[in-house]
Length: 457
Picture 1 (cartoon, rainbow, N blue to C red):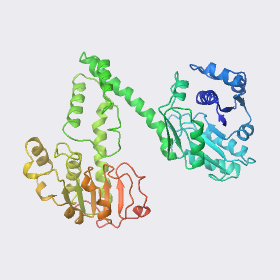
Picture 2: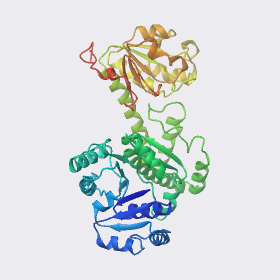
Picture 3: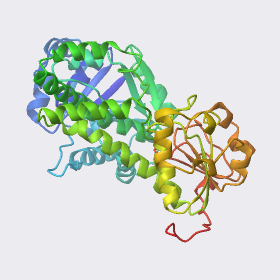
Picture 4: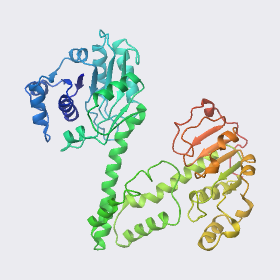
């Protein structure tokens, strides 16, 4: 396959050398004559492990060249990668001047090209940039997206020092596209690369690099804060984190990484609070660990706000315990939401098959009586009654009996706190607490006729 790569910096040079190693013919493009000369001499533009030999070999085999001529590059390639820098301002905004300029150059170069052309964004950009680049290319070329060309997002996940190894051995290859021809071409390009090939929504692909790197930064800071606490207690912090990382069932796994409602139960609130208290007792500043509870409280407030904004007085809460399959109400986040709604004058009905008032004892009883002392007036053992007598249904856990809710009660307003359904084709109004892209029925976005002007009584 013949490809061109705009930008012979760190990402572009590694990509050019690795693609050539995979057997593709690569044309590097850069505004720097010095970088172009280096590539054409079989020398890399960066210092990086293994890159020297790859560039030297690719050039000697005739699979790697460089130019300053964008038209030559585009007309002699099927795919053009954009790998120029997107530096940040002091406020954190991206400077997209270079990437937009390259998009314009590619568009001009495409004017007289008859073949379908794919533009692949390797640069790190925020969601929405792909669409803007497509518009720039359309304007500059006079051609139509997904008719004459398309733009895909193909973020890189390279670490300096191991970039060549990372490129050739990625955990996955990610392509965001809205064109099947482009997906097939990109799949063919990476056919000899191990790891799963994932084709997804463009904005999802654009978002991933930021999520990955922010989480990597969070892991470093979390590890450091744990280390600082362990040091004060004369505990081997490296041994603690070594054992922590051995748990791949919960600690390092997808289990807790699903956007949704706040955490609760008897363990997470209690133990995270104990660790914060321990740090405070030793005068150790742990801002990340301290922020966990505040962030959790914000998610509860988000749930309350979504329900309030529906403007309906009658609300049915489906599930009161902190997760499905248990009657544990201690620190259940939905209890705080119920308490807030009652304070605002909402008419509530609660259903939870696992919570039997007569069997609530001990700390479980103490907790719920402190929060909702008259729970017996709001909780029912009849799901159908709660649903039919409520205008808004709040789904708080994934009980199997809630699966058929959408089909059986098509007109209800649904507030989903746990992503109870992967796909929603629903005659009523549906809203997820932390997601908004699973609705396939456009009627769900219609304005709701409210039966209450406000919530202060």
